[in-house]
Image 1 (cartoon, rainbow, N blue to C red):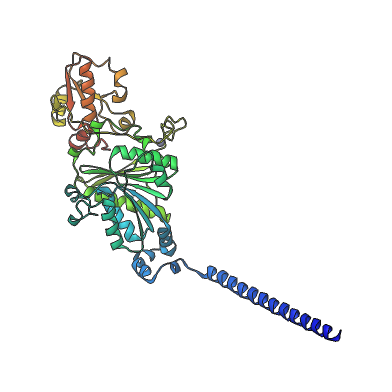
Image 2 (image 1 turned 45 degrees about the horizontal axis):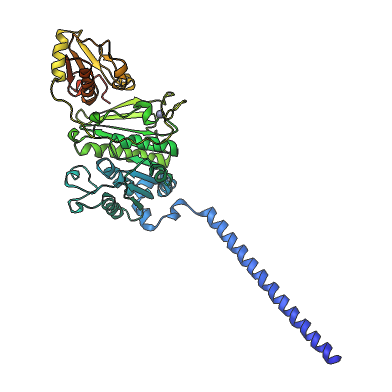
Length: 422
Ligand SMILES: [Zn+2]
């Protein structure tokens, strides 16, 4: 019995020792966790935004972080920002460089095109050695070279009604660098449904426009409800452009993006900025959300993303007149019949006094009071829609028809510069 008891006692002692050891282990672990938590808590309280940047980044961005309105907090906002650039062409080139250099953390680039020789005079993201290379790859190489700290995401695809919203979902802001109208309407509609804003830029010959559209302000359709017919498309090959104009407009877009991310300054939301490169003049139009807008209005007719296809058509060159010739004729006969076939919203921006407005979109129902016995001088913004209006009127038996070459754009430029050129 004594032996048995001794064995039991030994067993108890051993089990007790084991419990003590386990308890000590728990206490030690708890203490260590607690110290770690305190360490995390203390560190979080003392971390500054610049602690999230490497030494290289701190030096790289120093000249902008010393700006009080940007500072370290602004630089961190840029680092966390995600922008999607649609198009790596003429309009997309300059903002891509500057956004990467400024340290915008994630830059997505969507483009399905390859670099061609005729791109190089304006698409400065691409070099002669990049010919035939996908533009997104060429762009990625340049941007990584200028700033290896930014993440360049390539989307080698054409933006479509099917993929737009899905692409936009991963980004905070969209930059329209496409400079063609069907894409602009697609971006506008997809941004509206995805609840995103986009920085719009457009160029035509020696002019450009820039603004921001989105759900907290007007959308592009609040000003231009529908795209013009194909013949009017300003990005048709014959339009031409000088390289510095998309460069300048693209820089304005980059400026807006940086301000937007840092939350500083007055944005271009609700303002359309128009640049005239020849006169070297900026003008500004206040733009408002249109309650009758077919997309963002109170009773919208557009319920899904719309995709337009288009091709350039050549205007009939016969029966044309220059704005200079028209001016001479009007000086002799002030009652000359001048027919404006642009849309009402364009008329609200700019008009030629004495002209009659009959938008091409409703001309079929609204042409019968146009005189058949008098010469009709027809114009639009640039000459394409008026050519279509003339073709329509000819089909209705009209014969005294003259197209005004260059439309109200040429009139504003050459005859009456007080008329806004939009
Ligand atoms: Zn709208």
